[in-house]
Image 1 (cartoon, rainbow, N blue to C red):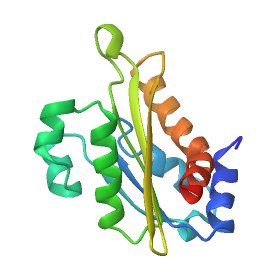
Image 2: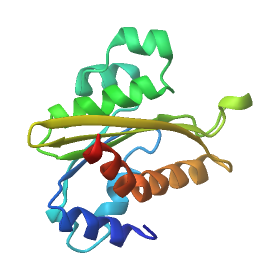
Image 3: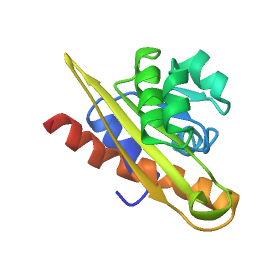
Image 4: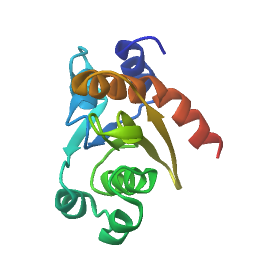
Length: 160
């Protein structure tokens, strides 16, 4: 996919409703979707859970997972995605957690997860990606990357 409009068309074509569970991007993923005319047909809801307690309270992320793996981990992103899937009418969820500014090698690290529920099938994929630039550049890159990967995640999950 080249742009957000194509992602919205993809969701519409496959009759998929999207929810997001965002930490570092703080709603940018859902905002990019909402910018596209007609997105109301494909966007169900967005959870912005910045703090560890919000991730636990709103999405059911385990305190043990946070303690064992850290906030910036695929494990946390996966639990965020599954929590949003359970708490929405969405068919597919994009979740992210990460650091937009940090000292050392954690700087720009983003963990992205995608969960899907189609009929009786439920699945999840995740990946860790590193972006460079200033705080808001990293956040924008992460949001756009997650959206552009959505069709790829969908195909992986549908086949799995």
